Amino acid sequence: MRIVQATLEHLDLLTPLFVKYREFYGELPFPESSKKFLEKRLSRKESVIYLALADDDDSRLLGFCQLYPSFSSLALKRVWILNDIYVAEDARRQLVADRLLQTAKKMARETNAVRMRVSSSVSNEVAHKVYESIGFHEDTEFKNYILPISSD
Image 1 (cartoon, rainbow, N blue to C red):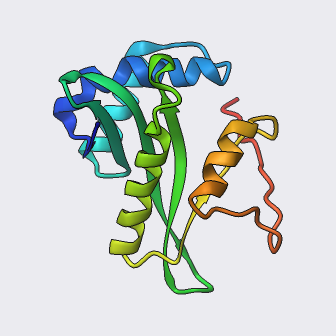
Image 2 (image 1 turned 90 degrees about the vertical axis):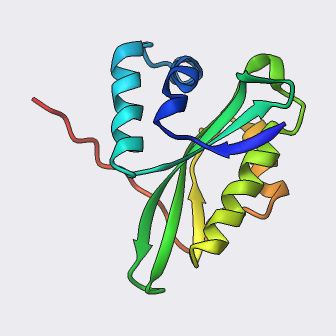
């Protein structure tokens, strides 16, 4: 497998797997909105997306991860938020997530980031094990909260 950074040329390849990722988390597919969302992130350089491609077939996407830049005011450095990671069902148990995460970790180092952050559903034990295997650990210093903002 090869890991490459996504560009706008990968949009049609990435969108169907991104839609499956959204469905995995209980969201409606919205393929056109999903494609527009990804197109904006890539064209505005608002995120970094890595793709895992099959060695034998550039049109076969095995998985992807998407990271968003942020900053730590306390550390005075960059932080990367690993917001999305998904592996195609037929590519699971092939270390696709590991390769994507290792690539993301390398990029974080190269951009002098102080850390990467990731959240996952409490029940996703498989993801927890994968994250821990590459060095993530549960944050015991800060508790995270969310404030839903509706568009009434």
